[in-house]
Image (cartoon, rainbow, N blue to C red; front, side):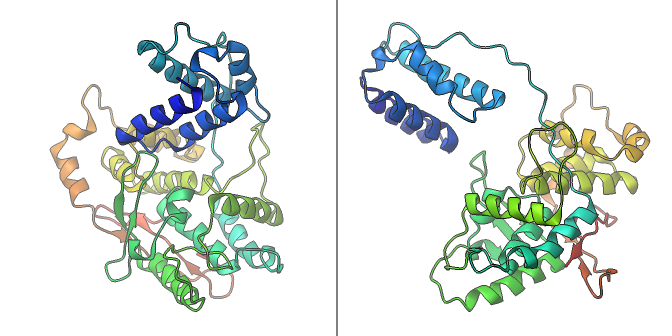
Length: 358
């Protein structure tokens, strides 16, 4: 069997099992282009190592690629297409865990204020209102950047105040409620969008009336961050990213709940559902990123579940099934009439996290 045929067959099998298999398929296709369409059994460990050591490959990416290729060749070894695994010796890589950047509310306001000046150049393919709305949407919902950019017009229900987010990294969809202030921002953007007279059904568009791509959004945000003067000052290898707005959403939400004495045993699962995460552990990682001043409350409020899983709590599951609204409160800011958008998941008492609509 040829390498290209083996890759196509393997990717098709994975997707038939319900996996999106996007980035993994991209790595395999890239391997095929680099090695060439040779016989599967002629692929050597040296060629695999050359692929793994490609330019701009971080230690974490090296491990991801290694595990992917090991599973790929193990699949064909089990089916008799190859006799020996062509994998090089796995390296021992000690890397620090990646810590996302958590923006302060002041930095969020600074970013939004800098949008107009950053995008005023004619060469910019994203107009200010589009960039501003994308940033507010990600920070207000905790959506992934790709989830936000894949939004279609039909995914936003302006009457019910709800947004359907489709095809996340786990190939699942969810419908989330949003507050009236965030909905007002989306309506204002949609009104400006309709004047472009485009047939593209994506909600966020560039100046040409085409769907805004992930790469364009990331490059534009990188320039915006530099204009706004926001930088990391720790030893992290990455500067603040647009994706960090999602992490900021979660941390600000948890900080607000702790400040108001909310029951984290009930609210963390709600946050997990809202953000489209799988399992409670993926949400609990944000606890360690909450501000230091909340440490005492965090220790006091953090649940001691033991071996009991949150899914086994009938009251909690009933609460999740009835999760139907996000509370927003408008406040006048200090910048001359700016609004404060504060969409938050609520139980009985509104737990507010404020941010300015500049």
